[in-house]
Image (tube, rainbow, N blue to C red):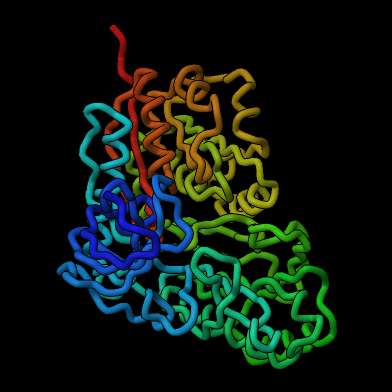
Amino acid sequence: MTPPLDDTCDVTIDQLGVGGDGCATLGTLNIFVPFTLPGERVRIRLPKGRVPGGGPVTARLIEVLRPSPHRVVPPCRHFGPAAAGAICGGCAWQHIAYPEQLALKRALVQRLVSAALDGAPLVHPTLPGVEVEHPWGFRNKVTVAFGRSRTDAKLVSGHYARGTRRVIPIAECLVHDPTGDAFAHRLAVHLQRAVGKSAAVDQLRHIVVRTARRTGEMMATLVVTHDGGRDIRDATRRTLTKSPHVTSFHLNEHPEDDGFLLGTRTRRISGTARLREDVAGTSFLLSPGSFFQTNIRAAERLVELVLAAVPAGDTPVLDLFAGAGLFALPLAARGHRVTAIEENPSAVEDGLASLRLQRDSAGRCTFVCAPVESALRKPQRRAIPTVVLDPPRDGCPEGLVETIFGEVQPDRAVYVSCNPEALAYDLAGIVSMGYSIRSIQPVDMFPHTPHVETVAVVDRQIQF
């Protein structure tokens, strides 16, 4: 029986959904409950306006009646239903002890892969991307958003409220690198004082700061709808004069009202054009607009797993969705002949700049700036025994699995995924084309969230 509208009721959390919220059932009603854990008995309030017999609903947690032994007190005042004001949308799992977060991510990957594949192999335990004893300060890419206060129309800086694009004021973020976080909020304070509630408030969109874990460099980018006025320039200049550790500062123009962090036009204001970061013994040069992994320690885990999966020797490797060369450059440094395919010109330019730093491997890595689908339509001039692919969140575009595993037919492929649902779907297609799964290894790139990176290794079965 389904309860009446707007009821307060008690439910038991059965498992966590893909989005990280607890899942419960009440009669015929499927319910998501944020900030809960499997096995907990909780009191909830069902949402207004739900339709009986409709789809799943998200309820509000009122009280935990029987807590899980893995529940901990969140250290951030902006987290969870007890947060003062609106709830920050950055973290979803601060109430879960970190070792249990790792176990839950492994279970999630296992559940999705097992649902997609008969006889799916056991998923390895999740590798942490932080110090287990102190899982904080790991995000080397710091982001602060701007908006207008609803009460006095003044500039507000912070993060988006959960499930919205409304900015709530936050003065610090525990998952950000502390140095980058301090600079971002210092600049935000100067901008708040400079623009007040003038029209310039609507010009400001984001501050993005990347800190290099190995070299100590810091690259900051102010994102505006159009080139800021004098007040914005003066506030930025004052902040930079008091921040000698900032090695470069950029201004990015992003006039479109969309969900992207950066626009297409970036202008260097001071310092170097690129930030230098070292990952797994390889140096990378990164510009503001190129994608690079947010958590450098976890990125090193990914590189180590890819290197371990690619057979050693002077053999060709095809690196698809190569980005700035996170895998291509270390593979070339180890002696492989790598063709790196990436459609983002900025990422390719960064990859080529980084390649010039690797004097010993410059002749062993070639970047191709093209969509993967079109690049693979060209005839292969030589056999490619190994393919590394790191597709976007939605997984491989339609038809690409068939092209890679039906036409290129590598002996081994290493699939790096940021979305276990897409991975499970693609693995089912790969297995149907005569491949077997050698290993599935989750890596925790984003602690305190349900997001998980996974490295899957597949081998072509020999036909007799």
